[in-house]
Picture 1 (cartoon, rainbow, N blue to C red):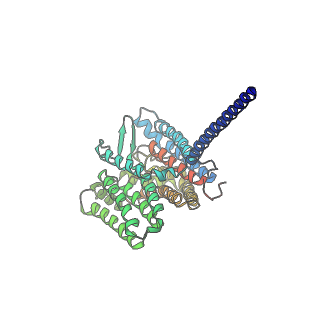
Picture 2 (picture 1 turned 30 degrees about the vertical axis):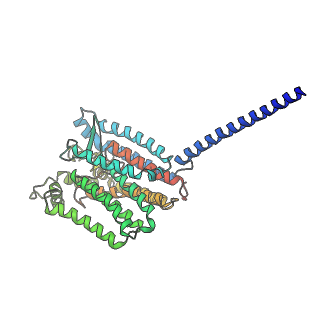
Picture 3 (picture 1 turned 30 degrees about the horizontal axis):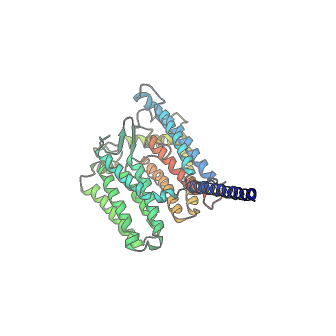
Length: 411
């Protein structure tokens, strides 16, 4: 009897231990599953949009080739006979940017929904920090950290798109009211424009205002309020430029724009004139890759804002049109991805980031062709600037992230 009782107790203990082990195993597996689900929320596994990726890489490669072609005489003259100075730096940031683009494409873009306000706060902080940094070429635009420098405005453009997408998607059905359709965006836009004007950085101000206006229009703001806000901002900028001396350099650029070949204005229009000579020299088919004459110390810093004039001189009208068509296809595909996003935040975010590229291309080419005053806007993927290129490629990664969950055919 005692033996049977002992055996029964042992069996019960074994079974309870077995149940305890099973329970512990289940808890452990449940913990692993919850961790796996949390990781899944931060990443997207489906395919990215192949046409958009192909267009980004194609434009990037052409941009790097043209940047090297435009920059090597200037690099040889300014950097101890090192013709590869600019392209070496740009290639490093291009590789880092492509890596960032692929990494960001695997991150669920909704993370920017959660961190929209902190990103905006960082943008304001950087715009204030840049004002106490030493001026470069008479303006406060760069934050210098040793040999590394970047423009705070690159973060600002991204912050405006993210924050506007965040608030509009939350208040989509209340955008017709002043409280939700006007006030939050004025509180974001007004200090941004003031800080940019203090640098001063008119070109970025123009891009920010146009991006904000476009996103509010898509968000469903009442047209009369839309017109009032846009009119007030435009009136303020015109007043500063025309009737005050706060933006004297802008007044000079307007005078030079109106008469780029006239000596009577007393304004330096050398860059504009040399850029126009380069465009005119290209003709239909161009002088050939590497055969530009104006890049030999005629166009100041041809690797920067006026690189498109070298493109026109070397590749001609045909080459310039092909590049513009590639940009148009990139914007078209980006807009398609945004329209087919699974939610309003993704749609607004995709439209804003795509529109930024399109706006910069239009404004840059308008400046180079003297259609608008010289405002110092870079050409995306072409102009020299490592941090700008890396930031731009990371933003393309956000669009690819949106494409992974969009309802658009991706091949």
